[in-house]
Image (cartoon, rainbow, N blue to C red):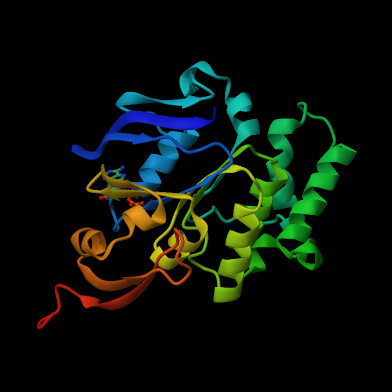
Length: 260
Ligand SMILES: Nc1ncnc2c1ncn2[C@@H]1O[C@H](COP(=O)(O)OP(=O)(O)OP(=O)(O)O)[C@@H](O)[C@H]1O
């Protein structure tokens, strides 16, 4: 059992932005959320984390609707890395990572040895140990993103929600991050724009379009040339270099460009 969204809808600005979306991630697996800009990925992640409530449908954790659970209970289980974290002036890198321990600590108590171990471990796994004392606001965009991942790891979650975690990262850090996240054995739902990274790292993919699920399945089932053309308006060549479930896409051009 884990986190699930069942037939969730959400409206904003008088528009239906999620329409009957069901996502049932496999426990311990990595589910990729794909879809063009504005298709509803971030909104769905916010519903899954309980930050937003669905207009209809339900999000459950181990079969129990989120509104029936205490916030702290959800915060201990589910870690969230949003696209843009707030600027936390005056905090060091280690301070930000320590925020991940808050759901595990008793009110007003000092960090325990277990808290400090989790923070040290998260810094090490994200390659940030030697940045621990650096002020957060002096970090580059990619470094900030890694600190947010470290904060989420320090939380020791069983569910991890990531909204485009690679978008500020150089190619090496993109691969390192996805290797790290997919090696955790934590149920992960990750919104991604890079279809090849999604194919390489996710066990299952869910494609949103206009707030609806338009495809779901393994990368091989979902990432066909026809579907990419239909959803993104882009021509791609799809190959299966390892003869397995992980296709590789080569972009040939936009279908909206003249002559395509
Ligand atoms: N508070 C709001 N008021 C009006 N429209 C909203 C609101 N919140 C979201 N939307 C709209 O809902 C749609 C879905 O937004 P969302 O951020 O979930 O998409 P996304 O798939 O994450 O997009 P991107 O890939 O660009 O990050 C967008 O068209 C957005 O403009």
